[in-house]
Amino acid sequence: MKKTTFKISKMDCPSEEQMIRMKLADLTNINSLDFDIANRQLTVFHTDNHDQIFQRLDNLKFDTSLIESVSTDNYSTTDNTDQERKLLWQVLAINFFFFALELTTGFISNSMGLVADSLDMLADSIVYGLALFAVGGTMTRKKNIAKSAGYFQLTLAVFGFIEVIRRFIGTGTIPAFQTMIIISILALIGNGLCLYLLQKSKSKEAHMQASMIFTSNDVIVNLGVIVAGGLVYLTNSKYPDLIVGTIVFFIVGQGAFKILKLSK
Image 1 (cartoon, rainbow, N blue to C red):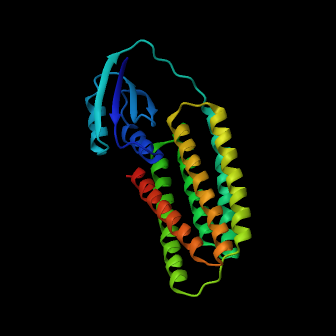
Image 2: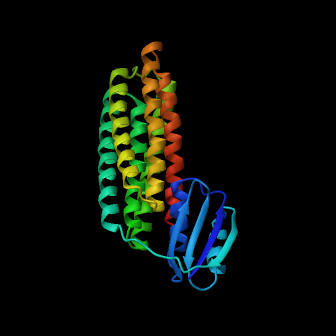
C-alpha cells in the first residue's frame, strides 16, 4: 500500500472537495481519500504509482503539487456508514425545514434577506444530499442530482436578483423587521443544532468536515439578516434588507456554479 500526500492550494470549500472525489471516483487503485481542508492537503492511500492520480488532480486546475509518496503498512478503515447516513439525514431535514420556513415568511414579510437566506439553506440541503450519496452512493446518480440541483438553485438566484433590482428601483413596502429578526434567530438556532450534531460525531471524513464548514458559514449569514432587520427598524428603510439580500443571492449563485461543476 502507498500513501501519497498532495498540496491542493485552491481547495478551500466543500465544493472543491466534492469535485476531487468525483474526479478520482473511477480509479480502481485508490483505497481511500483523507482530506485536510484547513491545510489544503489530500492524502491518498492507493496501489500502483500515483501518476494517474496526480494527472486527474492537475486537470482540475486547483494548483496541485506532490508533497510525498511513501509505502505504508499502517492502513485501516472504519465503517461508520450507517451512523453518518443518520446524522446527514438529520441535518438535511433541519436545513430543508428552515428553507421552507424562511422562503414562506420571507415573501409574507416582504423581506428579500429572508428569501435569500432560505436559498442558502437550500444550498446546504443540496450539499448534505450530495454528502449522503458520498456515503456509498453511485457516481452517476450523484452527478445527475448535482446537475439538477445546481440549475434549480441558479434559477432561483437569478429570479432573486431580478426581484431585488425591481425593489431597488421601485417603491416597495418596507419589510417587517420583527419577522426578519425572529425567523433568523430560529434559523440561527437550527444551524447551531446542525453544527452541534456534526461536531458531536467527531467524524474526520471529508464530506462531514465540508458539511461542518458550510454550516459555520450559515451562522454568519443568519447574523447578517438579523443585523439587517435591526437596521430596517432604525432607518425605517427597505435598503438594508435589499443589500443583505443581494449579498446572499450572490453567494447562492456562486454555490450553484460550484455544484454544477460537480456534475461534469
